[in-house]
Length: 255
Image (cartoon, rainbow, N blue to C red; front, side):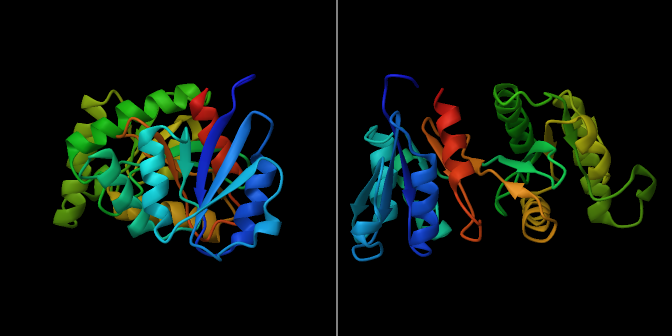
C-alpha cells in the first residue's frame, strides 16, 4: 500500500475510546481510518492522527453505502449493532444473505479459519462447499494450510444414536468428499493440527466454537471477513477488547 492512502471505515456505537484507540494504533501515513457514529458519540478532541470522524444519525447505513460506492476501501463493524449493520450491508450490496469466515487464534498462537459462524449460515451442503472454496483462497493469502477439516456432531461409531447426529455425519462425509477435505468427525482438536480452515456442522455450533474460544478460552478473534460481496467488510464482536487486529486484517485483504 506504499504511496497510496487507503481508507478503512469502522463503526462506533459504544466504547468509543476503545475503538478510537484501535483506529489510532492501526492508522499510518498510508492508512486512514474513518470512524462512523451518531452525533455526540465521540468527543472530537479525542480524534487524532490519521483518523477521521463521520457523524450521522444512521452510521451503519452511511458506512455501508460509502463502502459499496468506493468512498472507503474496506470497513469493520466495530461496536455498531450487528443486525442494523448487516442489514444495511445487504441492502447496499444487493444480496439477500451474508457469508462470513472468521480468523481465530488459540492461546498458544495457532491461527485457523472457521466457518460458518453466523447462526443463519452454512446449513446446507452447497453452502458449506462454497465456504470451503472461498476459505481456501483466504487461507492461502494468510499463509495458512489449505487443508480443510469438516466437523460433524459425533464420531462415525455414534451412528444410530440420534437422527440429527446421523444427518450431521452424512452431511460431513458428503461435504468432505465433494470439497476435497477431511471429515474429522467431532474431533476439532485433531482438525486444528493440520487444517487452515475448519467447517463446523452448522452456524450455531460454529458460533459457539468462536465464542467459547475467544470469550472463555483465552483465544483471539482477528475478525470475520464477509466473503460473498465484492467489497471488503470485516465483522467483529462488540465484546472484543480492541479492533486493531480487525483493521489490520481488512488492510491486509486490500493488498
